[in-house]
Length: 95
Image 1 (cartoon, one colour):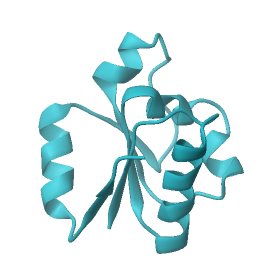
Image 2 (cartoon, helix red, strand yellow; image 1 turned 120 degrees about the horizontal axis):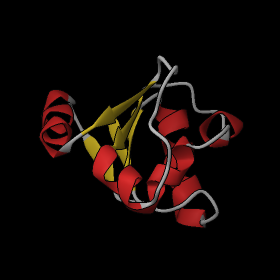
Image 3 (spheres, helix red, strand yellow; image 1 turned 135 degrees about the horizontal axis):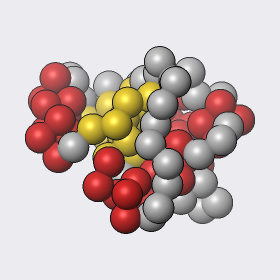
């Protein structure tokens, strides 16, 4: 299962998407303002332990640093996003 989150960490929608991913043991795609979850401990604070994909174009547009050193977080482009979505049995979003 894959959950797509487009809302920032300080919104109920963003937190609802991450909570759903936690509850379902799903991976997560962060895009639009959801890329802010990739900063600091936002995902770990929410209890997320799965794989997180960060859309690099949205991360760059918001001036965030590249994702490095985290084995469960990976930067992706739009082609990768399509691949990740088609590789999963179900896709839930957008929160």
